[in-house]
Figure 1 (cartoon, helix red, strand yellow):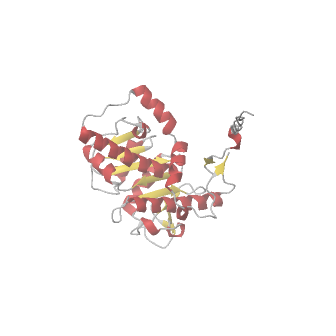
Figure 2 (cartoon, helix red, strand yellow; figure 1 turned 45 degrees about the vertical axis):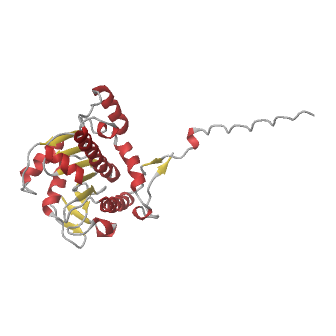
Figure 3 (cartoon, helix red, strand yellow; figure 1 turned 135 degrees about the horizontal axis):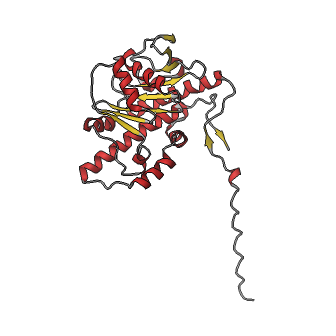
Length: 272
């Protein structure tokens, strides 16, 4: 009897897309639930920044608008390292920087910038301004991110440069200039100072800061090696429309979080 060739195994059928999980920002039933989630995410973002080295002494802040009292903001306390912060360490302050909840002082000069941006941008849930090495290096050149890759194209025509420097931290006029320079965009380069980002969630604003610093690093490396080739306008816009949304930023931020940054009793995502 001739050897029989065994039949090929049946190929698995593709699964319907509706059966595949995909993390999305959570939906909340109450302001209290949303407040706790924002506090946890803010503390988690600060710990991630501490891990990445995004602080310098007492410099660096993330602020998050309270979901119920929209003229009040959660922010990290003055003089505390990012790495060990928890939600219970955060301060609730009003637009004038007065502490409403918490046990420590707030950096008044630094928070004044955040308050000005929040006032000018009701859509901005979170604002980030903290020292990053490559962001500060790019800021010293006084130039924008060039569209040389997908990361920088996410900021194409959606970030600005404040092309002046002043040491008057917290000066009301300076704070207004910063908010005006940012306008409706997601990010701002402060010449000789560094980066500032804003987003519709803590996760989005935090990701924009990380992504912008990484894009600055690529730009500095490319310029040191030669003359970078720019992405054309049409392609840069298309890339921004795909990767430059707050939802894309929220999704991109999730892999940076460790279990310690996302308490098990805190709602983190919904799936669809």
